[in-house]
Image 1 (spheres, one colour):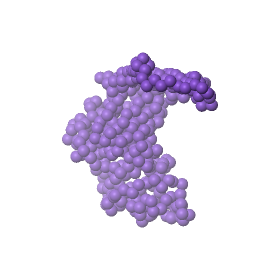
Image 2 (image 1 turned 120 degrees about the vertical axis):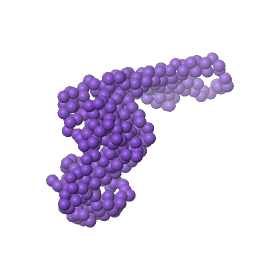
Image 3 (image 1 turned 135 degrees about the vertical axis):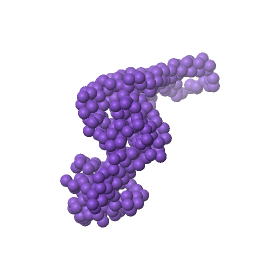
Image 4 (image 1 turned 90 degrees about the vertical axis):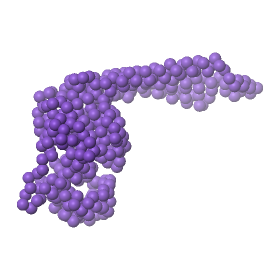
Amino acid sequence: MVIALVLLLIVVASVVFHLVTPWWLTPLASNWKAMDDTLTITIVVTGIFFVVINLFVVYALVKFRHRQGHRGAYEPENHKVERWLIGITTVGIIALLAPGLKVYADYVQPPGDAMIVEVLGQQWQWRYRFPGPDGKLGGSDARFYTGSNPFAIDPADPAGRDDTVVTGNEMHLPLNRPVKVLLRSHDVLHDYFVPQFRARMNIVPGQVSHFWFTPTKAGKYEAMCAQLCGVGHPAMRGFVIVEDDAAFQAWLKTHPGFAESMAPPAPTAAGGDVLAARGKEVAQARGCVACHSVDGSAGVGPTWKGLHGKMESLDDGTTVRVDDTFLRDFIKEPTARSIKGFPPVMPKIDLSDEEVDALVAHIKSQRP
């Protein structure tokens, strides 16, 4: 009887909790109300099964409780009950699957006038590519990958020379315009997720997945990786800015086209700018920029702005000056010492001496 009473209280408490303090979704900011409707159907169907099954268990515990002189009847088969259970279960599964299959089919079939944007996931950062005035993305092939060409765009493809490449974690989109999102991974499994858009999709290495949505509310929305992708996974965040078309076009013009981004930097007599530019490529290719900012903003690791020459406190209580030697040693053996106030999550990356020197030069160039 105690078990029956506990189960009954759980059922009542669960229903009351949901009705009084429901699990509210984030405000919808796109056209995908169908996603919310599908979730509501799932909650209703599973909720009905939860209540009915538990109430039946309560009934069985009370009805068939042990009593002196009573003996349970053995009935190994009951075809009538089996048919009812199969029928009810089938209806419930259809009610769960059918709406989801319909919504998903629409989710991956964008309208013909949708704007295309490509999202590239890499431990632990996002990059974006927009087509140029021709409205087409250039072809890509792994053969063309370099630190300065993370999308591996074919330099010989005219359609790709005017593509706009955004290396930061912030993407802007025009208001009320359908967007087809192409998704690629640079290394491991990722998942691009913007909760307010009800938009997410697994990004599988070696594949190009896609979905579409129409942003319907201007604002700033957080994007995140929804698949565990390594020690820096919690830091793999970005933002989507939805704004009017004029503001979007103005933002787009602040980023270089592919041909412009591939132009070599102007060398100096000492060659310092060339080495620093090489370090910037290494930082982008190896994912350093996901944890270290160059504008002074907080991150998983210390900002590189003004880092060189700065006195830093370590977790062991000592204080050191961040010079060339310290940077080289720290990059090669990041777990040997830890800077106070920052988690020791930096992985050891196999870098050549040339790449380490380039990174140091890049960090030195980030003067306040």
